Length: 551
Image 1 (tube, one colour):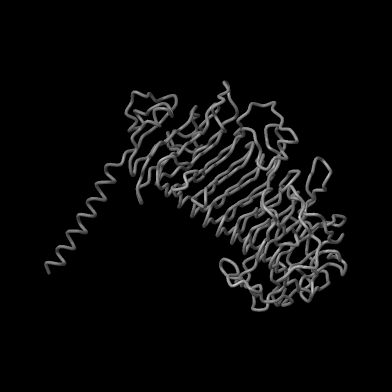
Image 2 (cartoon, one colour; image 1 turned 90 degrees about the vertical axis):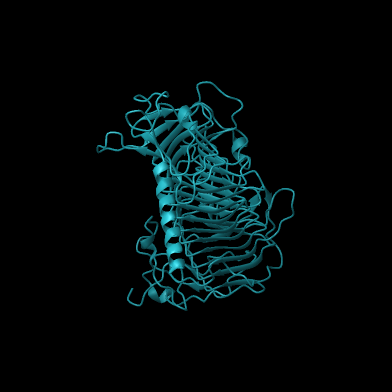
């Protein structure tokens, strides 16, 4: 009895403690015209006025910083070392001031500033329902390296955890003023050498520090001069990041990019017009998404469309030094650089159950292009100072690839590739496929006696001579036929459901491990559902969409 009484007291005291903590939490209100920095800020009737004052507040667990909706705040919100707690984060968000219809997020105008919002050494901080712009400067500050909508970074903290960036609208972020035009050499450099504007950045350059449990969700990033959403870690010290439901449009560089990361999920994002050139201040080159030095990354159910640039600029590509990066259930269309690109020193990476439409249309030598566009590219490139290596254990299966009549599909396969599986794909390429040189700064080697550990079989081609005879590997179980898509060239994935059941249903193989590969792929080789969510039988069909018995 005494033990039960003691436990009851502990529970009661815990509840009181929780109530006390919530009671101590404070809401701070900010209004740029009705406020004054001499006010307490603890009510709508006594708001503070500036982001400078807001940045100096001693925010604690459970506190909220509330920006008046529909108002423009000039400057930067800098949050140094703000520490919420698990279950009681510090929240920064817009608030309806008049409690009327027509709510619009507060806008931070960060022109001249390095960041619109800076989270430095912060943990348990949530930012949501805020708009940010940062278009150039009135007085140039040569000390600034860049301009960023939201920057999450660390200098002293051993850990940065539980950061959420949700429902942000970031637009028109440029370091330079209008009139600047990037040179062809600048666009050709690997990542650009000049100063740019970025949408959302996570940077962890402190090797001993860990940045983890980060969520970037339901944000819109558009019209920035370089990358829309970028993660930059060191030896994979950025971990457990979810990037979901975002729209990135007209970024001058890549849409989404990550380096030095581990355990990342990228799902349900829409990326359009990466590598945009509609403003001279933009870099003018970039894949919809790409990874480098990344491990255990799942990229699924996204759309990547209209990537532009003289090099790279695929829908989504896997740069070198990665392992276990899996692309699945993505829709890729009209990307200049191509569809599948896996570079060197990559292990156990895959493209499976994706749909590609008219990718890889770029022609080397035209409009400044220094690389061919490619539907399929395995490259051994791992930097200028290292010999080519791999990729190793690359899996490419159950993809649907369509190109319009008259457009040649190009491919390149480095002879250093070790372990290649190509199976159950549909290659609907009326003009056929052509071997070209892999050309990531220095040419890959594509000639030789063939590759070891290859399983290339059970793919469907529109015609018998589709796959080039001079390619280093050949399909040993090629099938020929017209899948009869309902609307070829459409941007609706459902239009790539084959109507010719006999050509595709149960014509594939169950995907095995490559010889000498004991790991396979993250989440296994067998998929339970196809691109559309239909069940995949033990003997799968061809392409990304399964055909049922009554289709």
